[in-house]
Image (cartoon, rainbow, N blue to C red; front, side, top):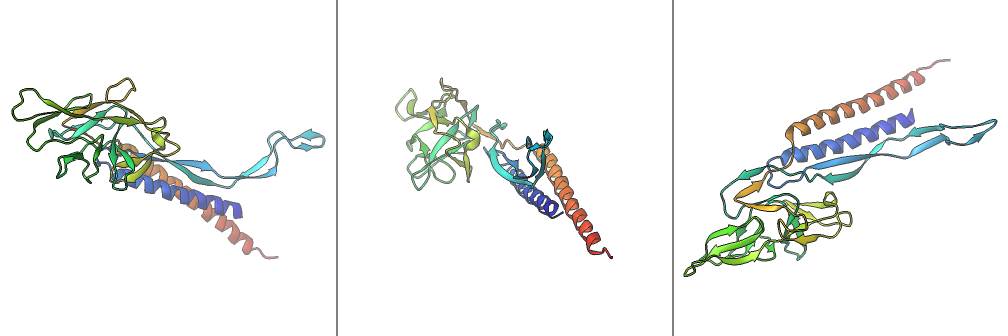
Length: 262
């Protein structure tokens, strides 16, 4: 019964973290470019009372006798399904249709990755995120430029005074990873490469690397499915309740033992 108490407690603790993850997904259901998180569980160690295959005269034990000691959260995976595109008509709003991430430079000089294309210009005309992190490669729009356009292949053009044809201001590059689900969430719509995600693979939108194309005047909505999250919330609640009932049952059994009289 001691094992039952601690095993059920591990299940309750795991479901608490599961509910925390679901709550974060629901809270960000309207966050541009947000990527849903999914908590992965893993069973814990087993106590071998009889090891499978052990020789016990005159036969060999085939199945063995093992007692599991509960569960634990093993990983938080970033789900990379495409979110719906929302038209904004803002020329500096850009959505990625397909795989890939924008590259931005953080204040400490490190590179982060994002699907949120809510870009704006800083006081020098450089294209940045809402937090002021410049897009990589850097693209600067002259103050007298008009009709800024971004093609689906990432070419940024603008019309300058005295020129009939648009001038090319730069080329937006995207990054992808061998395992995008291994990226680390940093907040502020940013992700960071890890050993699990692998090194970034760079290329132009729509290029031979298999990267997605860009849609100017659109933003990608969060890929959180609210209905699915509510279902997962109910399942987490019922799993938590079931584990709590195991603890109550074990406590009742202890009470019966304590009340035994000779």
